[in-house]
Length: 329
Image (cartoon, rainbow, N blue to C red):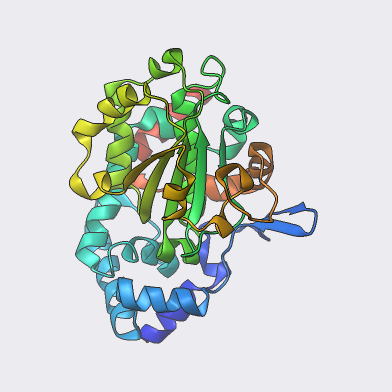
C-alpha cells in the first residue's frame, strides 16, 4: 500500500488541485518551458530516500497519519483526499506527519495574517511585476537539481512602478508553482538577489514590517526547501537593507545567506558555472526566460491558483465569502 502512495505522488494527474486539461507550455526556439510534474529522476529519488526518508515503509503511514491530524482539525479546510498535496508538506518535513501538520497550520496562518496580500492572488492580476522583468526563474536547474529564482532589485527595478508588495506576490506565485513539482519538492530551490545599482531611494522602500514578513515566510511558512540565498553585486548601502532583516533571522536561515559581491569564483563555489547564464560568469546555453514569458505560462494556470485559494483557515474563507456576497448585493 505504501508503495502505491509513492507512485501516486509522481503522477501529473494527481499533483494538481484543479481540473486543468493540459499543462501550459511556452515554446522558446528549440526549448520548451513548462511545469515539471513528471516522475522524478532516479538521482532525485535517491535524494528523497537518503535525505527525506522517502521509502515505501514511511510514505504510506505518514500520509495516513497526516490525513488523520488534518481531519481532526476543524479550523482548516484542506484537500484531504489528495495524496500528492499531503506529500508536498511531508517531503520538506522528512515524512514526520506531526511536523508536516504544524507546517500546514503555519502556511495557512501566515496567509490569514497577510490576507491583504494573499486575497484572490492570481497570476492574471499580477501582470505588472512580470512586465517589469525583475523576477524570473531560470529554465534549467542547478547542479543539484534545484530551481533557481533570480530577483534583480537594483538598476532594473523601478520602485515607483512596482512596489515591494508586488515583488512579494510574484515570489509567492513562483514558489506555489515550484511546490507542484516533485523534483523541486525534493531538491529545493536557490535564490539569487542581484542588487547591482541599488540606490538610496530603493533602500528606503524596505521597512522592518516588510523584512519580518519575508523572514517569517521563508522560515516558517513556505513548505519548500530553500537551500541558499545568494546576494551578488551588492553595493555598500545594501548593509542598511540587510540590517532590517538580521534581527528576525534564526541561525539556520542566516547560515544559508551568502554574500558574494562581484566575486564570481565565490558564487561558483556554490553554483556550477554550467548552470548559470553568462552575466553571472556561467556558460548555460539555454535562453533566459523573461518575466512576460513566465507570466504567459503562469497565467494559463489561473484555474490552479483559484483552487489553491479555496483552502485555508475556515474563518478566513467564510469571511472572504461573506465579503464577496456583500459586494454582489
